Image 1 (cartoon, rainbow, N blue to C red):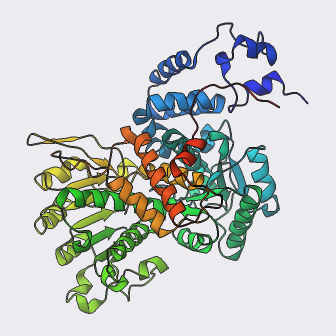
Image 2: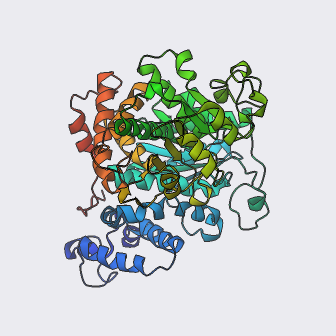
Length: 548
């Protein structure tokens, strides 16, 4: 049956709107359904950008862009390519946080996502198949929304995080938008605000845990890999009790990674490697304090630990360089309520004569004299002036990364860290930060945003047909990103700017794909990593329709 003209105009993957040529309008019976002028994509982009600029708030700008996304994917990505620095914080972090909070109030379009309900496990495969709509899915971003950003549990509202991540994959790395699928697993929510809201669109019950939850995740993985044999599964914003467990279960059998554990870890490691390039110090000489020992904090620690072992340290030697601080204070081997991941980084009380007093961040900083301090705590302002000055008194170039986001949850502001350390601090933040002017020097502030890493990582894995994602691949990706730092400039950033996202995403993809080939982890015969990447890269430009 021939596709109807209205179906063409309502399909964002093929719709060109006023960009359809006169020949296409005749061929597909679109005459009279559009204004007569045929516009180029450049003309459409100028028109769309003017509409975008007219919106008074970031949330309204995001709603406009999402409407364009739902209407015409090619034009959306063409426009985003022209304004990537401006649009990144709108389509993703931090504005996506507002969008998630209000998702159930603003809902108008499912945006080609798959909504998997734990209350209807038998329909998992059918749901994925229906959402794909016959498309060749190579990449899934899936969330159960229990640990959204620094916001916690937001039920199915968290689908926006999966949609936003996939937007960045395409904008930064050129992954074909018709090959991606956002998935949200609705296992319930413990967010009382949502449970009591009559407009909430998800299951109205507490989160399901235990065997029933694990079985549903298994059902999802089996269905996804059966339907889409080439798929890479990216886990996003799962809760502390499930994130590492899920990754460990599947990482040795399918191509998969957890962005909060591994993605965050390799970006932060890249920032630290960039800082070491600037300070001319060795990673293996550092004393690392991680404040906030949840999924992200432990993931970061594991990635740095792995790198230290690659530098020649034993696992026991490497662990001596870490000090993890959570709500209980410094984590010891007798601390109650430790997660499996935390147990790998605990200290023993005999190491510290005053161990019973190490119950807050300032006491720990005074006791351990860290050279690197990383914040994943979601405790706003936790890196106080006195704490930072104490740290700076014991190291010449303190590396300080307040990574919690959105903005209101950051442990410190970049300008304060520069001022409190008299320009010595090497800073990266979790949210975009403007350059800091201090005593005649412009300090560029790196953003330790996972978007610097996962698009290139994903492109390299997909292009090389990777069967697994291992530590060697992740280490190579970190070195590729950390090596981009310009150490010759005073005030140089420890990470490259988002404005060069597409260029270094390409570089990371090439390094990742080559690592896959070198380790013979590719499923298909590939001899040239660069050619394999170029063969699958998508560009936002109008092409002829093939509706057969």
